[in-house]
Image (cartoon, rainbow, N blue to C red; front, side, top):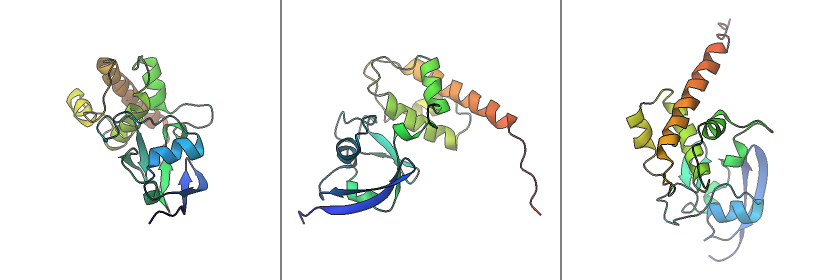
Length: 170
C-alpha cells in the first residue's frame, strides 16, 4: 500500500486532518504538515526521548510511531501544554531551575516529567531518575532536571491545596 491516506485527529485541542503516506512517522507529520518543531528527532530509534509526544494521554516516541496510528486520537505536543501565553507549571519549573543548556532535549523531558507528576505527585529522587532513564541530555543538565521535577511537584501541591474542596453532589 503506497497511497496517501487522510487521517483525522485532535492536535493540541483542535480537530485536524492530514494526508499521509503509510510509512510516515508522527514526528515527520507534526513538523512537516503542522510546523510543530518542539518534538525533535535525534536518535531515530526511540532511545533518547527528544521526540516524546502524548497520544491519548500516553507518552510515545514519535520517531517510531506511524502517523496513521493517530487517526481518531488526541495528540498533544510540547506546544500544546500551556494555556495561551501561560506556560505549563512543568515548563516554568524547567526555566526557574535552569534545567537545560542547549534545550534540544528539553521538550521530551518536560513531556515525561508532566506524565510522571500526573501519576506520582511527589516522586523521590530515585523515582525521578528511574522514570527519566529513557531521556538523554548530552549537556549533562541532570541535577537541574531533578531540581525542576521537585520544584514542579511542590508547586503543583501548593496549587492543589489552594483549590477548594469539591462539594458533595446531591
